[in-house]
Length: 411
Image (cartoon, rainbow, N blue to C red; front, side, top):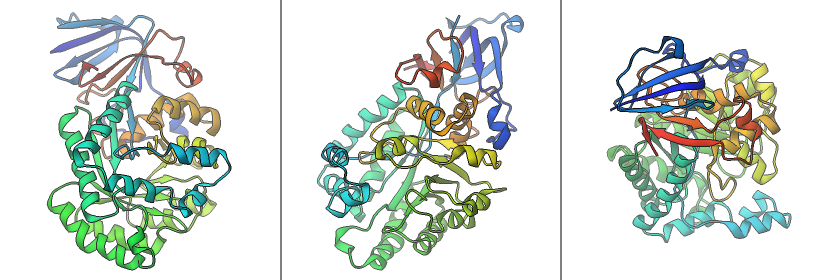
């Protein structure tokens, strides 16, 4: 099937295949074509250019995009959207002044979600999770990474990863699976973290690898959870099974997690709310993508990733939702893009780059999605009529999306 978009007010994020991600000053550049056309064939981007050069094309469907922007769908490289139940009672605790750490200490937090998930059947977990996935697709997300980590037992971690695989099999957007068994130390191993790490390395990982259930391995490298040394051991074990590292680092404290990620060639290091100059230096001239999660900062009322300082130092940056029941219960990438501009002082160009091409790179999907590039999947957002792309982050409470397309098909 051939679909022709014509009279596009502005076609955003136009790239050739030589660009995998953008860094530093280049993040302020958003290549575009005004008054453009785009042709989709068999779900892929076939051709595009200025309307003045639009060839005579016989299409099965023609969409007049007069007054509207067309851009690649959002690439959300950090979510936990496979979970059971919710933690709205903890939301009230936060309002009353309890910190994330205090809630965890009284039995809430990750361990609360783990208990609920362990008591939920695999089919029920899938039914809950597919609703969330469908919601984020409708909000413009065209590629997503999903982590385990709310199981914390062999059976429940495998259950989560099987649900992620089922979502991947049943939905058309690219989905990457990450094994995050090292999300917290379960109560059964409260005084035996070494024993839990041994379980992860010697029991969980071989089964996950045998069933091909994960693409990446992740660790919550944080004070009170897993040290930098713990993290290195787990990442090294994962690499032996072909799982590329991605790490939760520097959410509350800087304890060497960034350096561990760089040492082990992590695809991304995520959170980064607390960044020392040494952490920024460690990331320079590497292929590790820093990922900011402004929804988490907003919800927990903690510092935002110092994105301006990082980009000005020459680093790349990706944006993701951190969609999860405890610290960021929203998968809305539009809100993330707006928040990055409003609270982190990114320009609209930087935020859109961070949420598209750099987000794709942070999932290993830079050759499939994230830009308007011939041969990439036609996962696209068509906006309502707007004055400019600045309106996308500016109108933070407005639904500015008219249609979402996945593989060229309207959702």
